[in-house]
Length: 116
Image 1 (tube, one colour):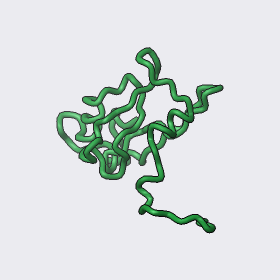
Image 2 (image 1 turned 90 degrees about the horizontal axis):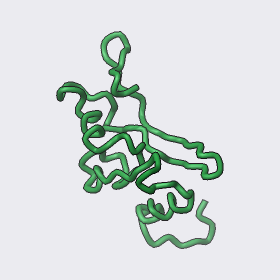
Image 3 (image 1 turned 90 degrees about the vertical axis):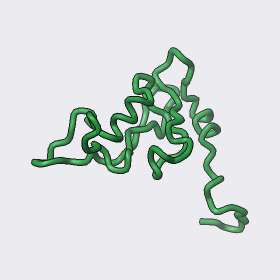
């Protein structure tokens, strides 16, 4: 609902990644569980993801790339390289919501271990 507010852009500037996760107080110091990935800064990793997204610190960009292309450059495990990324952090309880698409399935409905 727009009400009487005038919008001067097409919507791409409404969301400020850094302001939003600062507001949520996501702990991004080196010794914490989360990190900002910039693997998609040019939208080459996934055209459906933002430039930056937050993932567990134990998942480096090489691992993200392996998830995209699949093990040994075989078929990928997730549609359009959509991997679980942090979307909400509750600072008081450390509870999180992570979102992604469903893993792609192979013969017999089985996915790969990288996707699970």
